[in-house]
Length: 79
Image (cartoon, rainbow, N blue to C red):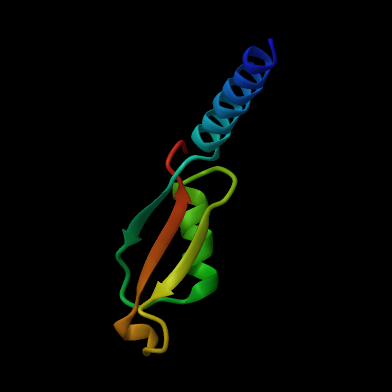
């Protein structure tokens, strides 16, 4: 009886854990081509293109001049 209860609890926790991982989603990326990258404009363009929660724009690669950077959008793949 104790083994059955322990196995049932384990299976329930396993299923809940799998569901939580699935609902968290994955992060996708997309580049927006522009002549130069400004972080505020990049964030705005990313938010406009990929509507939803968790959209973020960044100028890549970091530490370079804006003319050498590209806007990289990060967003939930479900968007």
